[in-house]
Image (tube, rainbow, N blue to C red; front, side, top):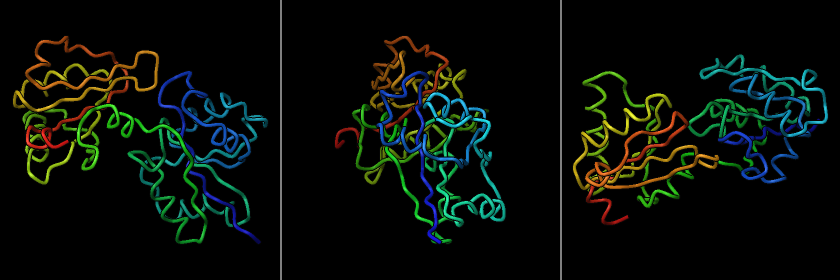
Length: 243
């Protein structure tokens, strides 16, 4: 029996932009699948309904995977592929396996000889970097920074030092949307005047706004940001001159 495939299935990163950000092949693949592994089952059902899946959504197999599933569960979820059925992995937004759950399942699929197929779709990290004007050859995604002080300020200064070194990289990270304005204010307060700071909000959405300024120039701007998904970035002066 031929094994099924594991499709890494991107979903939009902003509401109501399905056809603007996903190619028809990705949408059509989602419509053809019957088995799904989802970061969040509710958002996966909404995505499949939005795609116009021809089957009743309640009839589809949608397993919620969480962030750190154990190996036994992963093997169980992949059993349909071993029986010849294709499976799709979907995160809540963007590309599964990239700053989102899915990598562990893809790794297990490789061990089991299941073909892993990445499909084209939006990644907020990549799109933010593309528009940032920062170093796109050397970069790192750092997830979330600490919330409490002094760990938060220490983390900002550490990322700035790393980005400004001769071997440095653009440092990208995210924040819970309701803390966006506070994060930007902390970056402007704690970074050197020449350090570049990126704030990329609602990428691909109706309120998209992507701005990169030095910390000194940010002080001339309104630092309030919408409570929408935002990617932040730092690039120290030494690397900024070479980007």
